Length: 248
Image 1 (cartoon, rainbow, N blue to C red):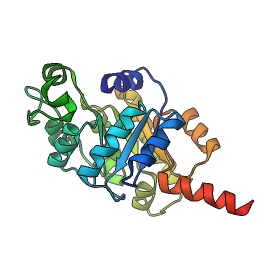
Image 2 (spheres, helix red, strand yellow):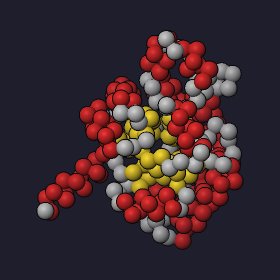
Image 3 (cartoon, rainbow, N blue to C red):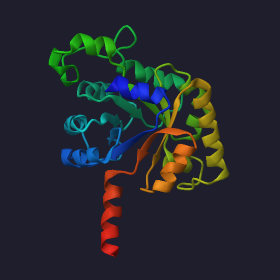
Image 4 (cartoon, helix red, strand yellow):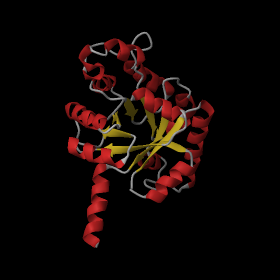
C-alpha cells in the first residue's frame, strides 16, 4: 500500500484523504466507505494516542485506505512507534528547515539509509514479512509548511530526496503571516506561489487541507495543482451533517 500511494503521488494522481481526530475504529471504517485514498490520524489537535492510532490503522487497511499519522511535533521516536504499528506515511508539523527535517526523517528509514530501529512488529506481520518490509518499505514523508520561515526554506526542504510532498497548513500559515484565517491576503497568496514553485522545481507533490467540507473549494485546489489533499475532518463533517439535518 505504501509503494502504491507513493507511486500514485509521483504519477501526479490526486489523492484525497480523511482527517481523523476521534479515536474510534468505527469512524475510520465509515470514512472508508466514502472513497478516500488515505487517512491521517491527527495526533497534534486530536484526542488520539499511539495505542489508539494502531487500532485506527487496522480499520483503515480493511477499507483500503493508506494509514498515516500527523505527529504533534517532529518526534522521531513516536514516528518509529507509529511506523511499527503500520503507518504508511508521516506528516510532520511546523517544518522550518531542510536540516531539521532531514534529521527527523533518518529515523523513519532503515539502515543503511537511516536510523530506524529494526524489530518484529505489526508492520512486518510480526516477522512473516520481515525481509520484504525491511528491503522494500519506504514511508510517505510529508513536511508541513506552516510558518513564514517554512515558506522561506521550502525549496531546500522540497529538494530532500526523502520528501514526497509539501503540505500547507492553511490556518497556521495565515496566522504566521499576521492574518489568521485569511486565505486571500496578498501575503498568503504570495506564499502559496513560493510553495508551488518549490514543488514544481523539485518534482514534489503539493498538499494541503481543505478544512471546511466544500466541494467547490476542493475542486479549486485540484485545479490549482494540489495533489495530496486532506478533505474536512471527522468532527467538522459530522457537525455540518447534523446542522444540515436540524435546518431541514
